[in-house]
Image 1 (cartoon, rainbow, N blue to C red):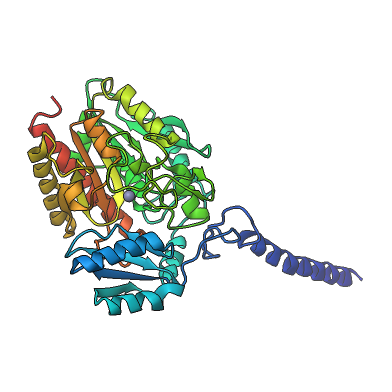
Image 2: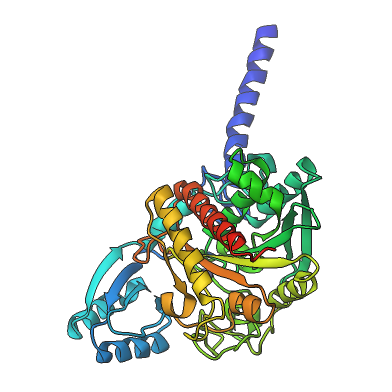
Length: 451
Ligand SMILES: [Zn+2]
């Protein structure tokens, strides 16, 4: 009788377990409407409305004559199925274009008809995104799990900053510039608090899909606090650092939850969304290399500094540039491996062009020595493409910050990954970026910029 009862109980326990396991699995992998980033499920945001890029191809085309350039300028205007990474501008230029699956035949025919030199860099872009999403740790993990071998949600980055503030209360404090368009905080940190120090400002993540930028920003924060390298310790001691890893938090969240390729903020304009915040600054606003069309990736906004995110940053810099003696402004982007200084809106030279050119060259050489990677240095207008309303131009010309750079981090200009850099490259990319910053700051100090 006793044995019979035990057997009966065991049978029920087993049945319950069989029932419970699939239920739990469902909750973790797709039935959940919250953002899901469990590695076992494979896809961040599973269960949400998610853009997909199956069989999208990346073409790298070269323009050899004016006819081809005019044709591709027309093509970019006409089509929302082709994502241009830059605009067709000049003979000899190479341009990457992400081509939607249903346009591949059509596009290949155009290349053939007009005899454009080209390469296919990637045949199925979704594979890159799927791989990348498996490198994201779940949103609600403990901040002690933060590392530079994975990518992280906005919440985890902010939790990690709070954790660092609790761990290093004398060296680091968390700053909040206020909320974004959709009500997310724009948070950063100040590392170092010697009032005699000059300050360095690092802006990162203004373009949502460039995930390597926030990862690099947190790497720099961590190095400033923990590095055993004497040169880094000196930097941490002699300067105060303002680091804002995600200045476009709405866009960044959107890349995890809905579209990995989103770039702008999430402001609504009728049927479409988004202002390119790095075209929205009030310095020669919308004069070149930006668009007045809200459907475009480089939409400058309805007016200069129209966006809350731009206003918050401008307000902070204006309030602190004198008080905190901010002498250096670094904006982190990807990709193309470039170290660029003002201006973006004109090829006219800034007053300290020779110095910025020299520091940039030194920084490129330091990266080459560290990792073997080639980073091109020069003014933004001539190095990547003309663009107006950028934060760097504003910081230099309007806020009067003499040392200003925009970094395009890995990969190379003909990258097969575009903005989807593998997580294994976070550490070396962040390290070479920090080496470049250190080199620039040391060289500028030698020239008396921080006296
Ligand atoms: Zn960018």
